[in-house]
Amino acid sequence: MPLERFRDISEMNAPQIESDPEKILQKIEFVWSMASIIASEEPRGLQKFQSIQEANTARQEYIRARARRLQSAESQHVIHPSAGPRRTPETEKGLILHLSDDFDEPLEDFADYS
Image (cartoon, rainbow, N blue to C red; front, top):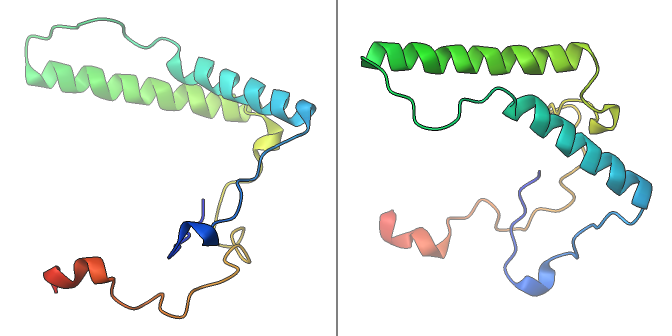
């Protein structure tokens, strides 16, 4: 999401709201499918460990298992195709339409810190 800076609320654009019901349903399905992939097999409740090393090992194993689930979902194309390409600097070209003249100037709010 691009960062925008405004001097006044009147400079803000109205938010872009999706109006096509089919696209809204696709996005909802995508969010639910990702939630089921990410949240599955998450340990519930309080877990006790004998040592810090054991706790760290369990945490690392959980992170690895979650990464494997996401990679598997990507390889099986479970992740919705309408999600679009991964964001890279090349795909973001042209998104900044206007920069204010004083964009690089120090903000007045931070004058005490300089």
